[in-house]
Length: 196
Image (tube, rainbow, N blue to C red; front, side):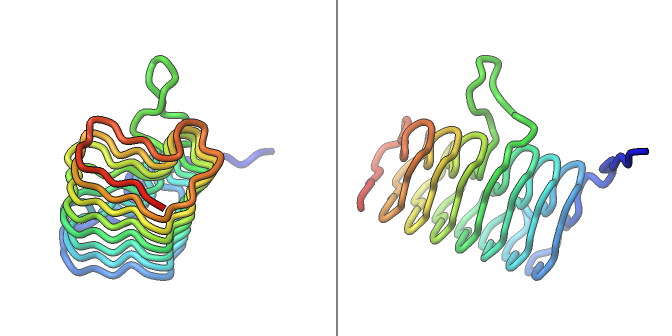
């Protein structure tokens, strides 16, 4: 007498075209990604609700804009991406890593609110990032000139902000409260300024 839902679509939206706009949608219950735009350029992903996808909610590529979305309850991670000049602004990112991606000893691994790799000029601003089951915002491996500003990052089960194996970042005027590890952690990353 019970209904069982099984996800079968590996991606809800994926493409190899540049200059795509995705706006005003509810995207839910993919077996993999909600939106997979990594490797494409100049996508505008705005005013969507992305929820309950087993792997990642939104993954963006170079010069993309991820604006004012509600990205929550993904199995692995809310946001990801790589490339130059990505802007992530005004999003709520919450309750991600429901599937419990962890290392063998129980540490955070490739999961939580958001993770970017190999970016240049990444700007993360005015986001509300909370209650993710790993780090809140994470730049890991060769992120150069990242700026985190005016974010509210609270109650994540890891670091609030984790800038790792990267270079030349500015973390300014962020609110960091109640995160299980550091509010802001910098690891193997020279030339990082944390202020305000």
